[in-house]
Amino acid sequence: MTKKALAYDLLTSRRFAPMFFTQFLGAFNDNLFKSALVTLITYELKQFHGISSGVLVTIVAGLFILPFFLFSSLAGEISDKFEKSFVVKMTKLTELILMILTAICFVKLNIFLLIILLFFMGAQSTFFGPLKYSVIPELLAEDELVTGNALVNASTNVAILLGTICGGLLIMTQHGRGLVSVGIVVVAALGLFASCYVPHISPSSPELTIRTNIFAGTTEMLKFPFTLPKISTIILCISWFWCIGSVFLAQFVTFAKEFACANNQVSTFFLVLFSVGVAFGAFCCNKILKGKISARLATPSLIAMTISSILLYTVSSFFRANTGTELCGLVEFLTHGRSILVCLLLLSIALFGGMFSVPLYALLQNKMPRSHGARVIASLNVTDSLGMVLTAAISTLLLALGISVPGLFLIFGLLNLPVILLVKKL
Image 1 (cartoon, helix red, strand yellow):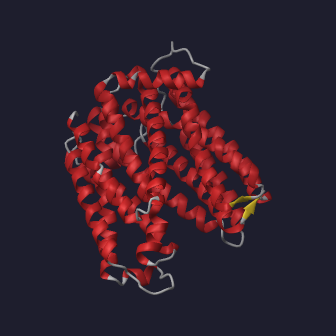
Image 2 (spheres, one colour):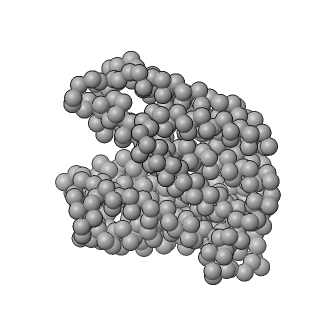
Image 3 (tube, rainbow, N blue to C red):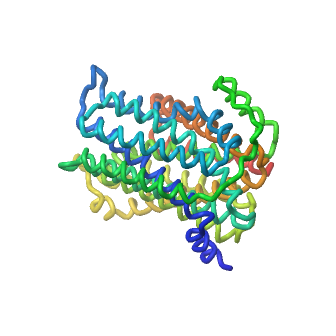
């Protein structure tokens, strides 16, 4: 069977399709809500109880990530202890309830409650996260893992992209708050409907005792995968992918303005390019590996990302697409040959990022003990979050020291090279 046929069979199969669409709709809804709220704060609220919109947006971003630090250990233990399809349904039911409350707050424009609800949505995502990847090896055969992960990773990037764009665009229309309110409730309801068809998955550790001390639980949870050299290496490599990806995504607006003298159309286009690139890279690695679980693409992918980062720095440091004083739009930006080169380099970085990460997810699922599957994924979520927060802090420091955004891309691109030493252990 060809990989294309296998992908089609999985997307139409009773064992995989319900979970696939459940996670896709969840990722879309998270970003629809978050993007709409951030856009509303940025463009409609100059001050909120004396807090500037810029500071408030930073607080919002932090509150969405915070539950991953607080509740990942609890989420992993619950996912391993109980029947997984039941836990999936409960998380999606929780999402629907939260989205109904969120819709009411959007209509009434209660920003304070919207921010609180975003925190609870982050918590809901925290409990769904370990399920998302730990059930894949339960639903698929070993030779289907690469294809399954390619589909999940690609669809997640597409869902994030669509949710971000739809949230930002809809909230600024005449009836934006009403449209967003209807949208988040409908998508949550569809996610709950899809979750009802997820096959029964037996608990992997029914004898497990749930720890109520979340801080001690997190420490204990992180100890287990880091006693297994190969598992810990895979976790660190995947977390690096999220670190470097977060650097690019966070700086696209500034990069578009500084390099291209371009408006938000171009920064949104960069986001589209990056998301499409990661998705395309996921399918490319699936085609190259032909279902084999292997890390052999990781090293060449890191090298290719580094070369693309060096070229991106060179092009963006010595050329400007527009020397005028007014910010140009997307059409004007794309008329410059150097701009096309920048777009191709961004696409290349994202594509090889997808080729680097997807096989590692399959390798992790194949190597992790089934009894600790959800807790290993929860540990990955914690290290991803810690890495992105640390990366954000380092980026902020470098920018404060006068490093340009292209220079920031170059530095993190070069840091791919030491990661090759980790990859070699696989």
